[in-house]
Length: 244
Length: 184
Image 1 (tube, each protein chain N blue to C red):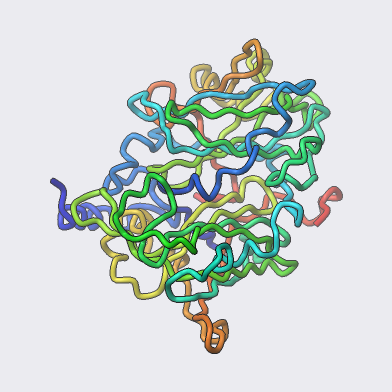
Image 2: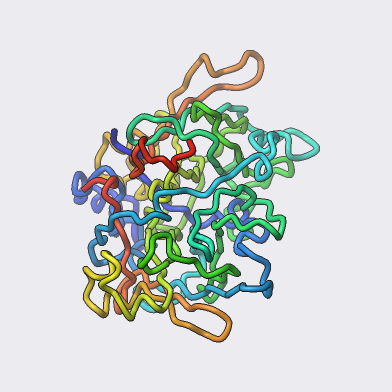
């Protein structure tokens, strides 16, 4: 029986051993044991197809899909929040008109997913799935509710800090990113092997949104800002085929 | 600038990321369509039933698709991008077209991204058409790999298409890629 104390020790032993990206080989996250490559990633120069990314447009995503609170007859329970920010690439350029997908638990910490057996209530007014396209400035914006923390079975009394899953595309294939956005000041950060798989504290901070009172709206929602930096593009701005 | 770290897709992505016909870049059985499929396997050789595979590819003429519509397929537009979730046997399936060379003389491939519960960050790889095995020197990546490693990147021809298994760990582990701008 693995306790939180055991996991804490393992986390402690691995602190600072990885770079700014998560360690793929991170035993405190038990599900990673048989699912990480053991050989070093092979360095590859991108070929032509990898210098481009798929295109998504208004035929793919409806404007209402960015509001997770209006998908049902009633309003979901929980603390209404707005999450907004910019998607930029590693050179600081906005990632414009590109797809952002999110999914999350409801306010009670339950996903609308058949495999989620956590006996917290489902909310008939909350699915927890949203999509939008960034604007010309790389800005995205979602209206949703704050997700709850939830237990999982990595070890005894394991709890995930509240988070929203984000799926992002860049301007070239190599920039693809799936990650999780966390909320400031969560008491579970130090205990969570998924968050701590990023062993560099500065890099972990990049996944924590900031409360922004200018994003909060009177009588309605609290506001969080979270900017997302993708890796650098491999295409040069002088590429004559570049249609951005 | 440092890029944001990735995090696992987790166990609960299916209801959010499963797209209507996301894995049908062309309708199955339409002229020129092939099945690209395979299994995702873990270090014990067991199927990974909670993985997600995405492909991005040129058209048969080698052109890079610039059309939108991957999330709401109209059945006529080739967007070059698809997403498939693995089933309980760890199997994924795409209905698509064979990519052509984007540069003369270069072997065509599907650019592949792998996500799974238990996988803390996405993995990139390539699924080359079978012909790549005959002249690995034509491709800088293949040329730099030992034959047994190279073989993990090359699809196998079948009656109805191409087979490409993805082994996350261990015997026959698939070659996964790091691009220059990914840092150290």
